[in-house]
Image (cartoon, rainbow, N blue to C red):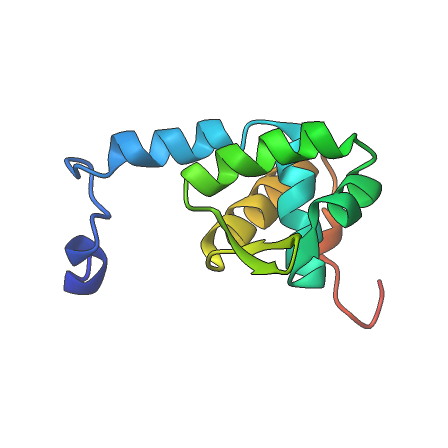
Length: 120
């Protein structure tokens, strides 16, 4: 293991393991995964726009966003009365992408993400 990865807590005895489990628990909800995907695609969205995209009520989406904000997965920007949400960094987006890729593997065959761009 390189010094770079060990320095950031990437080891079996890392004190970050329990925090990593909390991140997985935070993302273990279909609505939250959809919120992360929507923010990854759009960059920044309001609660109402996110609610439309994930097909949930604004109140439900707001509750999910509050949890994601506490976990520092999303951050906010206020413009007048409106609050816009965005991903805090690229890591949650990568976790969600990898989880979806892993799910594709569970179906057997060659997953879509392994196909070449030219089509096969």
